[in-house]
Image (cartoon, rainbow over the protein chains, first blue to last red):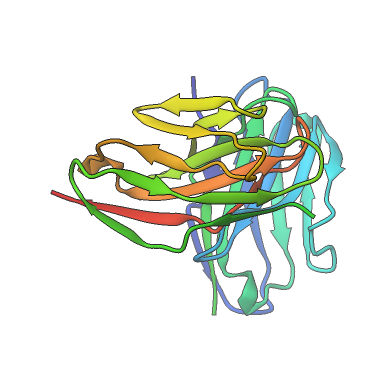
Amino acid sequence: EAGVAQSPRYKIIEKRQSVAFWCNPISGHATLYWYQQILGQGPKLLIQFQNNGVVDDSQLPKDRFSAERLKGVDSTLKIQPAKLEDSAVYLCASSFSGADEQYFGPGTRLTVT
Amino acid sequence: GNSVTQMEGPVTLSEEAFLTINCTYTATGYPSLFWYVQYPGEGLQLLLKATKADDKGSNKGFEATYRKETTSFHLEKGSVQVSDSAVYFCALTETSGSRLTFGEGTQLTVNP
């Protein structure tokens, strides 16, 4: 069974630029999560989707971050414009349903200079 | 709100030493508790979990017991190996399907 796929694995941008990350969850998984992991800290949930609907985006900085999950499969997380403090690893996870184990992708390491 | 506190790291041990990584939590209701592991260059993997008080989760020689009276979920292993070197995260969900709240992580290095 293929795991959660993410791309790119690494991205370096300058502040005020835009960036987008892509996630392909495990086939059949209805729930998809985006987490932000700042160096030296544990991951923090940014947004949770159930199919193509948002379940929880209470910790998403909506002035600069956006996410979508068209057709309830792949998802894209966008930052526009980026700030220095957005430097982090962005993790995507999926689960069969919201009550099940979450499976994590390898993450995208973003560096904002 | 919910929070998870892990012992300060990093932790360095010799092979075959006994490991304890402390984890305490604050939550309303009855959370489920987890330990995740992140090996170098890899994604987070679920190591073990416990869903109610006095449950013991175990996997790969690691164990943790859900202690409601002390709000703790300490990770233990009797004899660590070099291959156990990784970052370990304690986490909770307050209700099934809700967000995972993670601790800060503990870097474990095991020397031969």
